[in-house]
Length: 67
Image 1: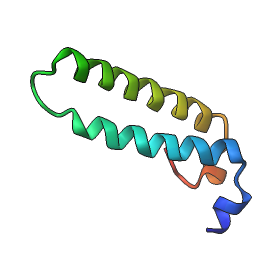
Image 2: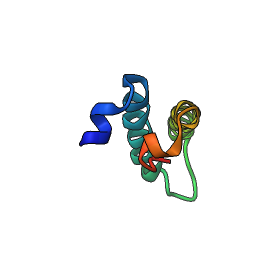
Image 3: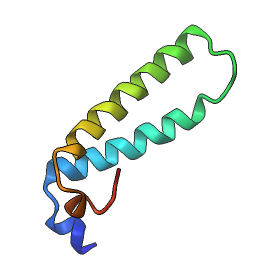
């Protein structure tokens, strides 16, 4: 809790976005995806990459090992 209070808002938002993207990506485990599922998976991957990029700009110690 203390680390979250000290962390910048941008990093906390990225951590939440990363968690949401991971949860969405776990939904798409099937061998065959239809067009809508493929588009949703690509959107989740884009969110994951964006959040990871933001978290990569902060020191690991400050991020608390979020990545």
